[in-house]
Image 1 (spheres, rainbow, N blue to C red):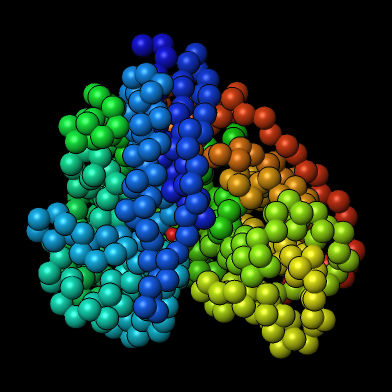
Image 2 (spheres, protein in one colour):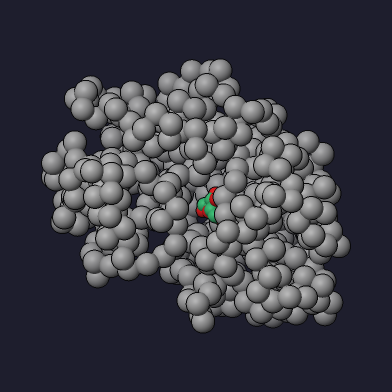
Length: 486
Ligand code: LFR
């Protein structure tokens, strides 16, 4: 057919969306049908996702989609690393933990005494983050001894939803790659790491590449939503992988920043870059669309501002950013990746202030000053990581594509252009949805293979930010050694 229609379900850490994508004459149009909030649910000292609540919103979105006529395919993406355990009857065992749950405190350090850091990195190419699935599973077993033995299956969050939609259990590759239990060289689970961390290999389903057809929606889904005959097609289920697939870039010499709760800064490579230098910078090699590698690094991102905003009684983001732009420049800087900023808490503004005090800087006082401090620090850290990427890949990065919700923060786009001395191209805001939809369209044979980025370029309007010269006082970075620590 010359028109095809696909539904993307995109679950982010702070909100979810169900969107309808129409592909016609080599162009994609996206209509968001349903938006809903998301966030961690604290229970008895732990932190969980409300997966059943999310599922209810997804069903509502699918009903709306069905009301628009026949849908060719549907696919889910979400944040990475989190998983559900199912028993042998495919029932959920307990809740789905949030990666910011402090149950993982100290686990990574402990496990790296069982298998050396270099060996884990060599086997997986994944950055050391305390919440990688590998460490979460060990923390899980420590809190609930025997749980991994009782479990029959492990499904990552999007895989769980695909199972509920299609009845098929698989692990989609882009998300599998974030677990630190996956070997990017073989494309299979990393046996030696599973053994060292005592993760039962039998829990892990087969790995399938993005664009895999999982079959039709079940009759229960048809009954519940009205969708009939719709294929369930796994997109790049890791939201960042979908976003990177939709980066409107051509040629060489560019990097991306997928900007949202996290800032994911990286480049696309044809192969994993697993070298001592990459390890020194704690860069990650996550799987991308079309057998590419996403060589990137996590920066704490707008999360710090999201938590401050909660502490300040939820003022409008636009107002916060406008006020920050009016606050004086050249104030204090934080290292956004300091571990203290990872867990949620209404004391986030105090954590920022404490960091500034401890490092002998002026203490930002107003929300405007604190927001400015965070934004400038994110921009400084982003340019440090860009330099690290240049060193590790021995290429020059002259353009930074900022995609995702954070690309709407024009002030941050300009700060990144100024502080990194690179041209910033902002947009699309809905890169994740677009990447999700286009991988489905490609799998359904509706667009030529490898044409995703061209379609984004013809479908979306972009904004350019040229670097302006900045006073020398902004040039010294947080500390030259910062890029080298994890
Ligand atoms: C962004 C993201 C990052 C991942 C983090 C935790 O939404 O998926 O890529 O490191 O969330 O899962």
